[in-house]
Length: 190
Image (cartoon, rainbow, N blue to C red; front, side):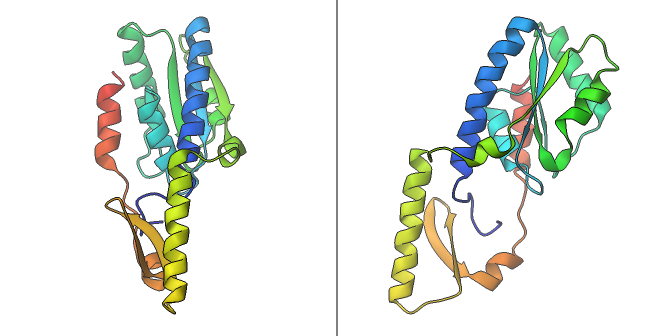
């Protein structure tokens, strides 16, 4: 949702994905493989972007910034040339399916690729401390608004502060992809 910097549950989903990336990376390292980790995000690649950056992914693929198979292969080849024998690709489900990428990359025998679809695992489990506090803060704001007689408000986060906005206006806003963070991911993944 464009009216809020992060939605409730985002931090939990990213941390769950990050935990999986850390565990999968250990196996990929020991077997010199590449794993495509598919995460939630049909229309928004934020989970893939934030989990990928924090997990040191060699490639991040999001629906807002699609890349070609040639670009994926080039990044993986460059990573191999730098001495890495394993790799992580984080794929937002809206940008493609992990199994389809494995099929395409199987044409490159030097790339030993596997797939892992995290899917609904990201929706379950206990929330992070951040999401618990965020939920509490949003709930408190909702109660304040109700006490004041306000209705049709969306509650979100802006500049680290809880705020509210007319719900009709909130849904008109267009979400912007964090291109700067995506560029940073490409720099630090080398």
